[in-house]
Image (tube, rainbow, N blue to C red):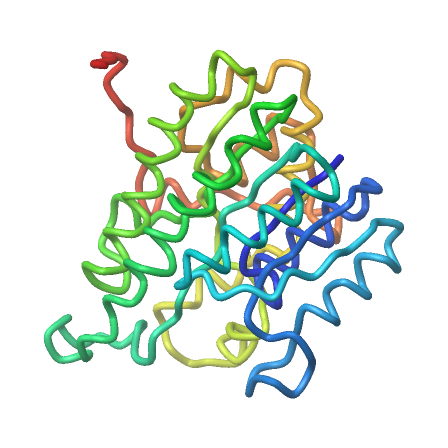
Length: 280
């Protein structure tokens, strides 16, 4: 399997890449941090690639700023030259502006909150655009990583617009990919243990108490994606927004510690249901 995961230097992207590596896949990973020490946060493309190899996969780093369309085009052109196809695309690149989790109203957080509309929403469309010619050549699956913020208030209107947007994007892309046998879904991840969230596990902030209690590993959504990519009836899931915990239970996927994480649907709400009408 040939996969590409955007935004995979750390966090969910890295976890997804490692889970795909467990299947023996060749995994291309994109990100801006090439080497450890290039960022204040831990993690880099070099580290992710090394861990992919240690798990039995083949990792290939693609240094790429998803705010730059030319760099994105070059990344997929390299995949085309080296592989001639792409089986799985995971759109995970996301800008995380300062104060995104602040309780202040959006006009007091700073205009930089809208950077997520570029690297988050627009970048998902651009990556899918350049990936599509490789995917229709026998590909399997496109996954947009998302969250319950697609329908409930979460972190403000910019964040919500991104999540609602990538959800609808997956639904509409599924229509175009359907004749080629490529499934497209949006995946609502739960609260993940990542480099950025680790401090919250000792936080006294009541907003995170329930979420941290049932936190998922960063590899959990990748396990779900790997299972769906291998599923013989994956097209029946296409065009929909799925809760990772619910899809995992349906596909028989557990987290790395053997747990079956619960869905946050009762607390945070349900995925959207879209009209079946198609207007060309």
